Length: 75
Image (cartoon, rainbow, N blue to C red; front, side, top):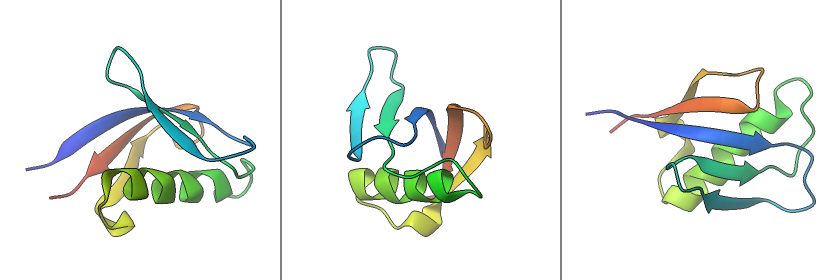
């Protein structure tokens, strides 16, 4: 069974953090710049740490070049 998580990424933030919004979306502040995939890589690390799962289980399936993303979680 796979799960999809909606994420609103805020790149180039001072510190990494995760906040759950009212609609179930995760608002993730990413402490990396959005160049050459650095922010997406850091986003995966932050979400994996927050969910306490290996980062290899997470994949961005939509919005790789957008602030609004969908992350697929493999079970």
